[in-house]
Image 1 (cartoon, rainbow, N blue to C red):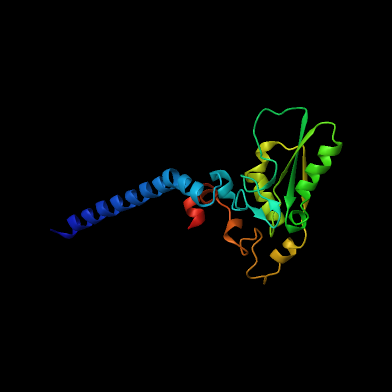
Image 2: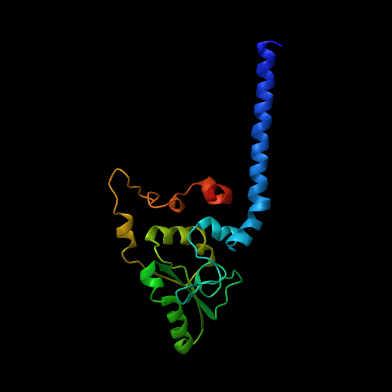
Length: 192
């Protein structure tokens, strides 16, 4: 066997290997991935890709986290009803620890002449950047009437890093801040 034939066989083997890896990754991503998400963290794929949600159906201190990994009322995408107002809360611990989403639900249930649905996207240690990511990638599809945003010191904490290590997207603080088309759409890539 000469060098040209060996090269041809090596190229075919390399191509088969690459194809096998790609097919395996696609199978893991779309067939096994959703099942693993259901068993491990219990979040739908779209929310798990955000990386900025809590463990569903748990309590953080005494604050109930709903099945979507946030607080307050569950989001739905039905046709908009004119008789119900939708409010979204975003922020970090300054909003979350004060149980503002549930306080708003209680207050509106007592005084509002129409039904008000309040969903809370505020969670501890979240920054204005994570609120933007949550809104742009997920909450923006729900057409809220009002969005209440309240952040405390987390953005200052995110900026407390040496200038040479600082990244404008806060990816210096964690991999979930890093965004690109591959990471935004692949559970496998996100968790690896």
